[in-house]
Image (cartoon, rainbow, N blue to C red; front, top):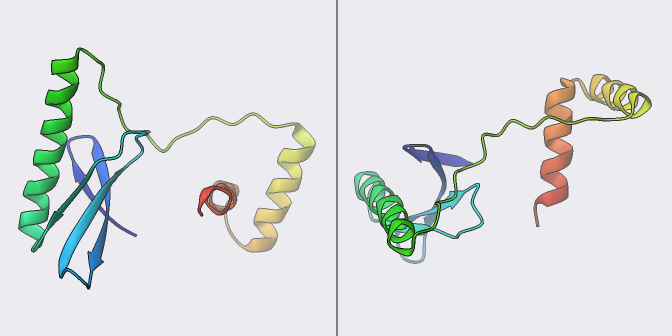
Length: 110
C-alpha cells in the first residue's frame, strides 16, 4: 500500500488506469475524504486542499475534527491467550506484534 501524509493525516494512494489519475483516500477517520490528481505534485496539492477544506468545514460547523488513529493500541489478554499468540507468532517466524497486526488486518479487510 502506498501512503502519503499531510500534517497528521495519511492517505492510501492508488492509480486509476481507466481515468489515468492518482486517487487518494484518507485513512483512519470515519469521515470519508478522497482526492485525485494527474501527477504526484497535483495529488499532493489536492490532498492538502482536501484536509484544509475538511478542517475549515469542521470549524464552520463548530465541530471537533476527527484526528487519525496513531496506529498504536494497548491490548489486554488473558495470559493463556497471550502465550498461545506468542507461540503462533514464533511458529510463523514473526514478532507477536506483527502476528497480531496481520490477524487484525485479515479480520477487518473486506
